[in-house]
Length: 431
Ligand code: KE4
Image (cartoon, rainbow, N blue to C red; front, side, top):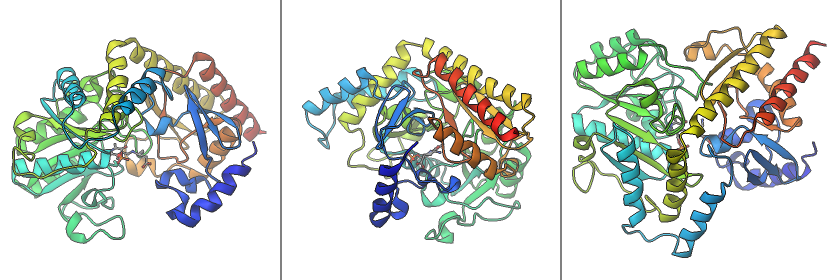
């Protein structure tokens, strides 16, 4: 596929934007290729500036669960624009959005809109610290919760090690209260809690990890975190920026795994493709937040009416059509289960982790149940597979440590064709 216009645009982009991208993962650095500049999208397709069509398995990193440019979402945005783009004042639609989520998700009694997942997690952590009066938080190696300073922590080692910044520009003081545990390892969490008695405000976890590739919570892990939080007086924060309103249905991972967090963060799907994040949970915690309580948090475009129109339309479609979720689970089984079989058939060492519409291919024997194991993957082999799939019209996340996002728009034929393309790749590699 020719990529002349993308190459020209990328050359210009790097002159004006760091790395030529507004978010690092888009730079294709992990695969050493020129990123494709997307001109438009519809349903399961994206089209680049050179006119190439791709089946899209990124879906804007999760928001496009109904497929791109869903007509009802687009119409709602156009209608909202006609009334004005932003008022910086209360609007009816913000109340409708908050009510929809609070009435649908058992653990959410109150919710505050923000503009990104990063902002949602940053604010939820602040609310938890304000509510408990404690400073420390526990996160997990390999989990990503946005780029707020306290979350940019090098994978910790040892129980007593204070968090070490994992980015330049983050002072040690910002991460010294961030402790790092091992995903699916409750004893690593218990050690940190015991070593920091009555100091941990919250445990922040991706209830299904999707930023080290996809790693599923093992039986008892999430319920174990719930029990540890109750025993130690810490809050449990589910970062559902990816899993929210995707995994297992409208009530997300909390519903799927039947574990009730104290706070939940959202992003992506609740914006329908527009910049929206949110955090919510127990009323007594959320009422710590300004202007009711002493925890400050604000945002010029929070609850923006156009963004709310996109988000509430998408959420309403999902709520009114639960069959979409059974369909997504079936699509996931067909695609990821099919990939698993093909890799086994061609005796290529791969581990396919998946649940419902989220999955990924680790180029290694496996199993992959935490970050240390995920890091053993053959990223060079991933890059070759990525390049083949892109060349043959499949737009995948350009990193071994990201997810494949399925949408309602991915048809059975598209999944069959994707599996055929994978098989053709393995035949070529094996020759
Ligand atoms: P944003 O600030 O990018 O809206 O959300 C941050 C965030 C928080 N929590 C979880 C679990 C997330 O996955 C994310 C962001 N996800 C990445 C995809 N791995 C966004 C893609 C990007 O960084 O461009």
